[in-house]
Length: 463
Image (cartoon, rainbow, N blue to C red; front, side, top):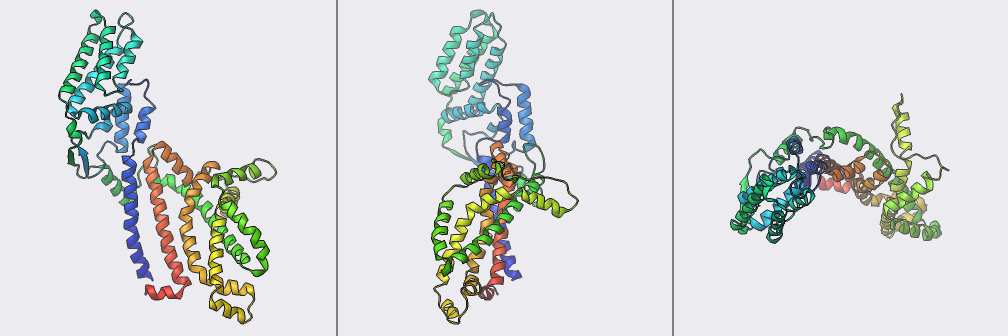
């Protein structure tokens, strides 16, 4: 048995690594990062840029490691540079990407972009005696929003019309920017957007740094508060596991008893009522059930049932645990109501199939009571489906925990996942994915152990 579990573990570990690696790479390829949120929160009007903010943005990129290449190699087009993510503000990255897609010549694009930055700087230094200040700023900002040559040329004509002959440096900046654009159009190489280019980056990349830190049991630091990911996950996992394991035990205990009751011939009338009710509850979304429970039990004031997780100091850990568990009654009730119908119907259908077997007929012919036949003979032969459903349902409940924890403001993994995704805090997101993958792998190992314990036939296959 030990050798078998060890072999399964050696198969599971590469799977966990592959899942976490794919999530890491996809999270970095998704447009938008926490550094982008940092930049967007500091951007003013369209096209405006501040040198101090640019330095802070680049410092933020370096602190999170996002200034490095993503992988050991990259497969790009010849027109695509490696340093586009370092451009600030983030809106300018989109503008430059549009120029790359149309013109394909990165050196000429860079020269044109630098001339626009100089033009923008001169526009900010115009006095009231110069050209119309608001109109010039709007026209200059529009140059950062388009790569269409006709619109760009029309904007330069408008800038010439609003420019006075005595404007000095401003007039020179307009002429210089227009010349740079004409040079860009003349030197355009759009075909480079379809020519592939392989670039090798060595070990100094984001994935290598992340993977080596994982091997050293360092899951990184949160982008939001610079706290270790393991410290953030520890408290959240404790709250989630307390909620999920308690709910899971309650769901399966009730489902087993309810399915056994429904299979009794004397409960035929109850079956006609309970089964339709279970089907109706199963068709109701979880958030509807949660809101209904909140309105019915938490908002009326008739029942003194708290919700969420409470943190009260107590001398006895058992008292503190009981107090915390009491505040999870409503979230547990919601998860039980949402999951009980499906689990019960699965057990009921499995029992109905077993009850048609010959050994059940033999047990009944011996004069055994119906309850004993159900519990001692029928239920023992559906243990494998019960184990499969039990060990596979805990990771599946985490998706329901997202809704429950957000609505009940429980500081668990579900709420943490929602907040981390919205904030693009990918180290925490990847840590949560690793936790779910490890939990899923652990559930498979637990299923193998329970199979070995419950059914002697599996021991022969394993050995």
